[in-house]
Amino acid sequence: MEKELADIIKIMANIFYGCTPNQIKRAAFAYAEALNLNHNFNTSSRLAGRVWFEGFVARNNISVRKPEDTSINRVTAFNKTEVQRFYKLLEELMGKCKFIPKKYL
Image (cartoon, rainbow, N blue to C red; front, side):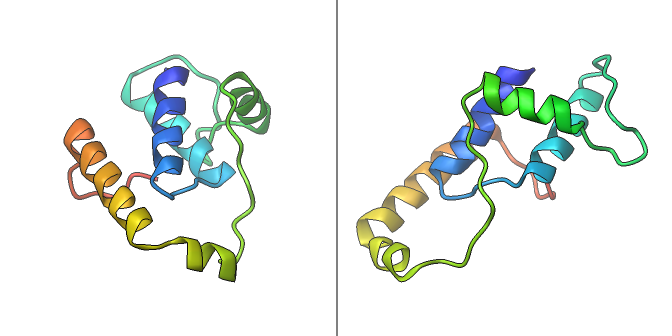
């Protein structure tokens, strides 16, 4: 379960969509529930816990950063080549994951 979730998070980061800690904890809870896995996540908040999250990012070499305003350097670096890369990666992801219209995280 963890490797698949980590791979999805890394793919999302590669297409410029970083996840917040709560989005990752919510996705882990939903994933565990969908697969009927035994877990001790908080069923009232529908989130995985802080201890699980910290272990997950450490075990899977994932860096989660606080969202910040886009800097001028980042805006100017987002040129035609980067936009084409973004849409190519998005197309691959859409084909691989067969998304349906729904809010995932």
